[in-house]
Image (tube, rainbow, N blue to C red; front, side):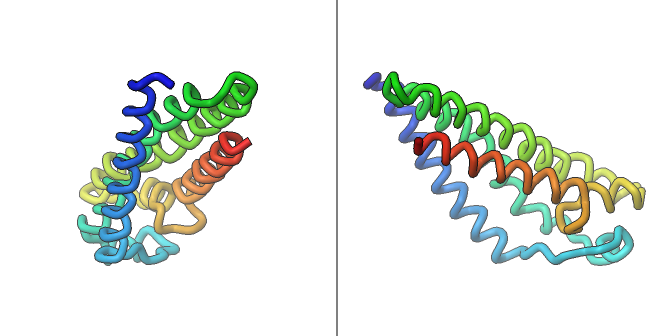
Length: 151
């Protein structure tokens, strides 16, 4: 095995473990409540509610080198499963990465200039929102990715 692939995979794995721990600490400190309207979200919004989104976004980025290392580490006959896993991983990165970027950029901006439609559509704390749905789709892709890598 290539030494660079091994180092990349190990660094990505350690990064993912650390970022997951940071995420768990921030989600315990700043739990996300379910909001069913933009008005209730705006009334109770605190910028600290966005802290768990930062390690979530960084986790998406840390998965990129992990997927690349897993692909290159796979033996020849398993490359098709590794490629499938990498493609599902790309779906996760696109869906969840975009969602977290929206949470950090677009949502925070619209809090200062409230637009009920944008807020109710893009807050992850609203179980019926686009943001919540796209995040769940991203994690479906992540799950499929790991299933493919295990094949």
